[in-house]
Image 1 (cartoon, rainbow, N blue to C red):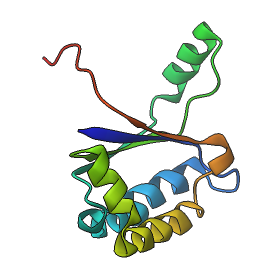
Image 2 (image 1 turned 90 degrees about the vertical axis):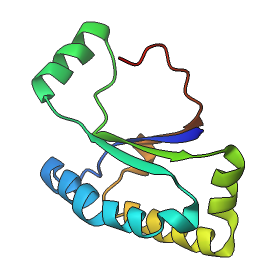
Image 3 (image 1 turned 135 degrees about the vertical axis):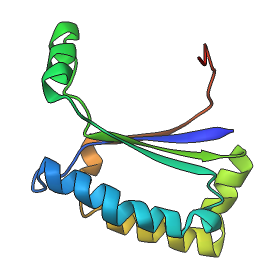
Length: 123
C-alpha cells in the first residue's frame, strides 16, 4: 500500500476550534463521499491535542510549532492513487476537495507527500 501524508496548518483567520470542527464534520464527509472515485482505501484525520505537551516537545528539540493535524489516505498501489486522481471523475473530486481545503488550510505552511510504510513493530 501507499499512503498520502498531509501535515496541516490552519489559516490564520480560522480559530483552532473552527478548524477542527470544519475538518471533521464538513471536510471529512466530503472526502468519504468521493473515496470510491479516488480509489482510496482508508482516510484518517489526526487532530493535534495536548498543546502544553506539544509546546514542551517543540521547545526541548528546538522545532517549528506543531501542525494542527495530519491527514493520512491509503491506496492499494501507487497506480491506484494516480488513476484515482487522474480519471475525469477523480480529477473533479480532487478539485472539489482542494477548493474545500482552501476554506480552512494554510497551504503555504502545510506539507503533503506520498509514503510507503515500514512497520518496525505492531503490538
